[in-house]
Structure formats: C-alpha cells, structure tokens
Length: 216
Image (cartoon, one colour):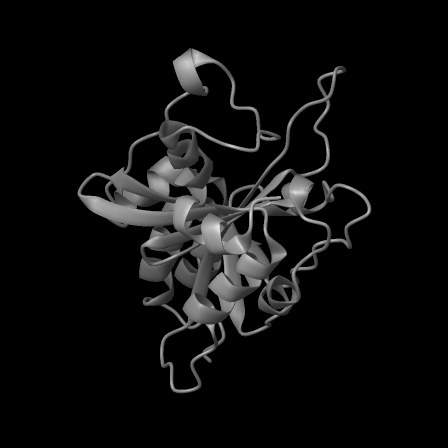
C-alpha cells in the first residue's frame, strides 16, 4: 500500500470545464478521505446559503450486462470534487458517513435513487443518504412547475445559463471507462465528475430562487 503521505501529493487532478479549473481527488485511502472531508467540507455554523452537493455514483457491468455494486462515489462542491474508490477502501470512512447523513445538506444528482440502491462492494456498510434528490425534481419543486420533472441536465443548464458540454464518450482511446480501475486518465476523471459538477452548479442557481433546501 502506498503511504497516505505520498498519496496526498499524487492523487489530485486539475480538470477544466470551459474556463473553470476544478480540483479532483481520486482516493482509496480512508485516512485521506476523512481528512479531505474535514478540511474542505466541515459544517459552517454561520453559513446563510443552503448547502448543496453534487452527487453521482458509477458502477461497472457484470458479464450479463447488469449493473454491479457501485465502484465510485463522486461528490462536488464549488471547484472541488472528491471521487471515492469504494471498491478499494476497507470501510466507509466515518467523516463520509457523517457528511452523507447531514440532513441540512442537499445532495443533488441524476438518477440518484436508482444509483444509491445499487449498493456498495461487500463487506462495506451501505451508503445512507436521506437527503439525496433528483435535480429535475428539485427544479420542479422550486419553480412549482411539474413539467421540470422531465428536464434533463442539458435543458436545465441552458435555462439557468450554466455553460454545459456533454461528457466525452468512453474512456482512453475511445474505450469504455473501467470504473474498477486503480488509476484513471485525466480525460476519464473529467467524465467521472461531469454530472456531479454540473448538478452542483445548476442546483446552486436553483436554490437561490426558492427555499426548498434547508439552511444551515
């Protein structure tokens, strides 16, 4: 195992979305995951805006073409994303459990219920996130307009003036991304965090129009 002191300096990627630079950590170290969450996402008692987090999960498919347990958990806030390699941690980090269980935080994604129900590799404890919500549903609730329930990420990005480009298809050299890999190419990491990053940015603009998300 590579020591955490070395991993902390080599597992960060610098990704660009248009002119925005996003730092991404891809981690399989419980120690570093706990540290990143504590350092970057510690609750701020004086915060006045709703706390919103972009969330996504990725799973490989088995030989029958069915979705396996989730291999990767993606969380995004501001210009930082954390990718947790669930397949390679020996337990769900305590700070991650607490973060996902914070009822004052709204975790926003696409197809989140189905993805969360996919489970995690054994023998890890299940991921519990009671405040995960579909981005389109959040838009419908805040705008009080059911038609938003049918809106996809691209449509919502256009309405809320978030510069959006679809993720590049496939992994390195046009192949499918192997979500069980230990190391990813930079372009693959950009694809991994794509939906969570844009869900966060769109949700931030959404919640400023309404009060559906609890305020810390």
